[in-house]
Amino acid sequence: MNRRPRGIVSGLGGPLRALSLAAALVLAQPVPAQQANYRLEIVAPAELVETLRTRTLAGRWRTDPEFEPDQLPLFVDRAREEAQVIAQAAGFFSAKVRVTQTAPEAGDASALPVIRIEVDAGARTTVNRLRLELQGEAAADGLESLLRAGWPLPEGSFFQTARWELGKRQLLELMQQRGFLRARIADSRAEVDPEATTASLTLVVDSGPRLRFGETTIGGISRYPSSIVEALIPWNVGDPYTFEAVMTMQDLLRSEGHFTSVTILPDLAAVEADAQREDVPVNVEVRERRAQRVTLGLGFSTDKGVRGLAGYDHFNVLGRGWIAETGVLAETVQYRMFANLRTPFDRAGHHYRGGARSERLDVSGELTETDTVFFGRGRRRGDIESFVSLQYQTEDSSIDSDAGAIRGSSSALTLGYAWTLRRLDSRIDPRDGYTLNAQLSGAAEGFGSDRSFARLWGRAMRFWSMPQDSRLAGGMLVGLVEAGYVLAGSRDGIPSGNLFRTGGAHSIRGYDYLDLGVPEGNAIVGGRVLALASLEYQHPIQGNWYGAAFVDVGNAADRWADFSAVRGTGVGVRWRSPIGPLNLDVAYGDEAQRWRVHFSVGFTF
Image: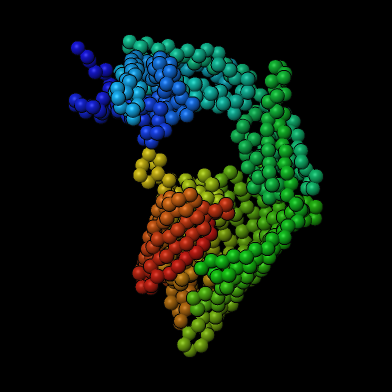
């Protein structure tokens, strides 16, 4: 009597047991008959099918033009061994493999021979015992609990050879990152009982001594003072070596502004050459940016119209490595002149920055001319940036009305704090991650300000990539929430840059740029409250082209009692260019009752 192998679903008849057995019948990928050398049928648990198809001789030669029919018996013989190894690597150590070959029917010239691989996986091997022991100097540092927390095969998990090998590599890497560069595997055993389908794991790690930072060698410095690099070394000679400190310095140097590339590497060759060595030399290699740069640019957006930029930057002011940025930005609705000066970073990521700018903004019936000077101290550490500043603003405004222009002036001396967190897979074209922004500032009447106020503002943006095993594979969901509030008795006497307006390509689409706020005369001016939210889905069309659908909701007002959210909905096209996504949207504003086209580049973080 023929007995169907345990764990197999033939798909050719009988009760379907795919759910209970976690198995499936999978035929070879569709191939034109004239290109296939034979048919390949695989009956196995779903997680083994792709590996059996791609890592067996029978799978790889199925469409190879150099195939010879007399090779089939070899493929059949090898498939048994190959399938057994693949099953065991996935933790099926009691698996039984059956491989058969069926010749085509006589007289049918178009028929193909068939190779059939059946894997009766049986019960999966489970880790029933784990002995993870840390020896050497690291044993006294409490690292064993950390190693156990990240171990990929805890007791009760399914044993897999690949995860066993990966776990050992990751464990050694973790030890080395914490300064134990001579760490080694002293004992490694995986004892599998096929009858009981259990695995007993033993892993003993000898950490060896913890090495310390040695001398740091700097290369590539000729144009700028070496103190720029030296000031960012976050360790002293003799400090315990950690890879985290190396990466911290590399991140600081890359964002510092003076260098186009940075490479920081521990000299492992020196450590390996001398078994008695107790320190790790570090080599820093930089490529310097040119000391001066002229920037010219042209652009266009539906928010601000035609744009032209002319800038001049100097990266070594007074020979001290100070960075000066100056420029003129002219747009259809805005004109700005600016000059900023920044000091190099120190080892904690701190720097000082000051500057001045003059702006003219003409939008939604309000014309403002603002002059600003500021000075502050910032910090950049990993993916977090912060800035504490003192800023003085004077502003003249003109608001269009039927009775003529309404003119006003205001000034404010504000103390502010800004904080930004960016955790993205890419800052140019993000697909996963999030950003958080927060600002807190305030002014006191009589201390350089026409009115006392406190301003709070926050913004969060999230990117979700769709699961690769779903129908939405390749798609992305983008969410945004933003809110602001100015605590003051009135908006009068507060410069407009401290108030809120919204609308446009990067906020609520379907409305003109900054066209949502407080009506005054024939204009829209800033208010004291803001709230908006946006949700957008992007799906691949072809190549770097994506389609998008979105809904934006929100508004700005002078009081929460006056707040009434409006909505914009629409569709768009995205092209993922080397400089970031180019966005073309068509949106309908429910309040405005009209369609608008929006064009922009990139995301606003």
